[in-house]
Image 1 (cartoon, helix red, strand yellow):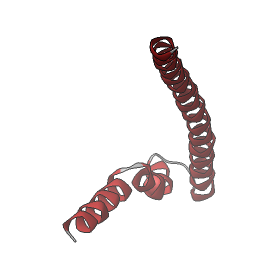
Image 2 (cartoon, rainbow, N blue to C red):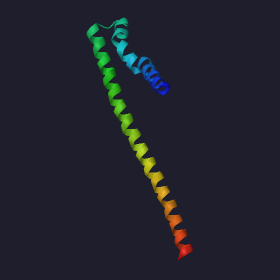
Image 3 (cartoon, rainbow, N blue to C red):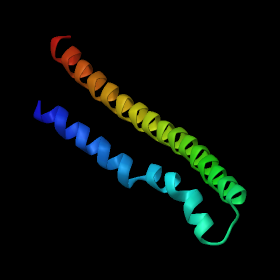
Image 4 (tube, rainbow, N blue to C red):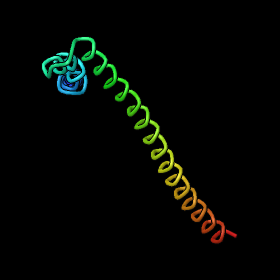
Length: 93
């Protein structure tokens, strides 16, 4: 139960302090700078689209890096296992 509560609190903190809070108040912030309401809303849409594009770029890069490292680690593991098998084969053969 404690872990579930902790996960819930972390998710709430992330929502309240992250980009979602900024995006929620963006039209108001732009209106306070002197932009008209429709212009402020368009600025908010632009920020949201930029966030979306760079989120996908980050996911794509992260996926590539993780896959590359996983493949490299798997290859090293396989090489070690082959070496072990060769040594065992030489001892018994």
